Length: 261
Ligand code: F6R
Image 1 (spheres, rainbow, N blue to C red):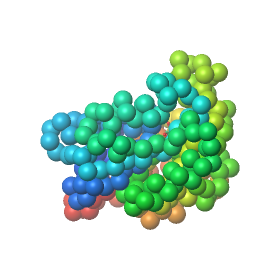
Image 2: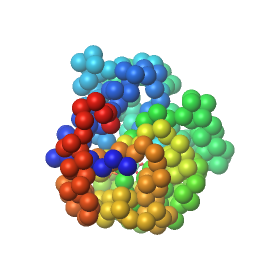
Image 3: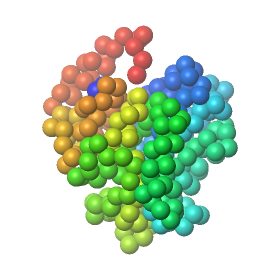
């Protein structure tokens, strides 16, 4: 796991955008994994800027979303499909139908989940998966207790995540759906490169368990310790509880120019 501590949101976004730019230049038909939430928003803005500057194109690329609320009306602004459309998909040149998400409105959610894993497989798997982390250690919506081998399926949000996400619903917890469809930890672990971004003090405990704790379903993000190519981009506040922070800073400061993310 490469842990990189950067000065703030823009530096983290630029580092993640560099990784995606490098991938798209090497493999224009790359398959990206997109996260929602606030952590990747600056990254999406950076990607749009690079697209507008002619540095990158998504014309041949495809993308799969991590998760989706169950039961939100199709036109709800917080439905993750609509969020991704608004924040990135409609602002760059993805081809029609190139961005897919789990179908939280499907009459048969189990079948929709299986079909989603199959669609990822058919696309050749995800080359680079963007991730955030919940304050309770979830990635996608794999809440504490999730099977470390889980596939895409329905999960119930923890009260902590409902509270955390109420900010997207006008601060009203009663408006946050309790059920979601989410890629499983096993699904996420099949992506070839994981890039996780975490910002702020509220993530420091989860980051500590993910990077330096034992691997446990209690802190689902700790499964990243088993991934052969995981990059964790942190601001100072999110890195506050890392014992080896001086070492991570030293490693990054001495990173050879030829070594990509
Ligand atoms: C969203 C997702 C979640 C978020 C996490 C952090 O697609 O998968 O795991 O990444 O809840 O959310 P923010 O970035 O809003 O702090």
